[in-house]
Image (cartoon, rainbow, N blue to C red; front, side, top):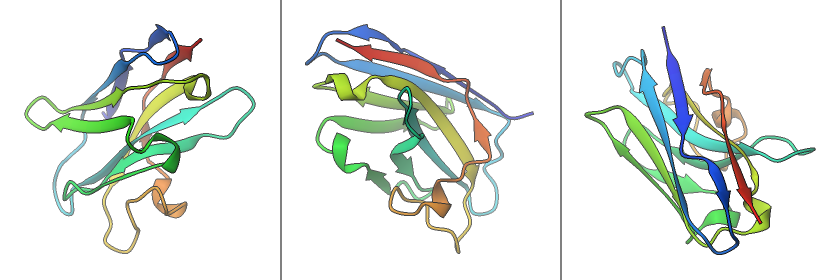
Length: 130
């Protein structure tokens, strides 16, 4: 049973920081590994990829968060993190982590709309910047 659980959301002032966590269980790290990422959805907008991490550790970020957000992971604990700095009102959204098996013929990158289709999703955590 695959389960992704996000935590760490909250309210923060403009310019502040937050760190989100995503605890992952039941995802098998066999074969080609996994493609994982952080996504967000603001009210009235479509869900967008924030950062996507390939199984080899290569990471791609959305242009809007480059230099402000940093993804990391603790493989021993199966936890994915998102450090968010210099937050602004446009970062207000529900943040989700997602995962899927990595497949060599499907790019694992924010630049690939197809590659962003995750199989597993968390329930989301709200981030409000004001």
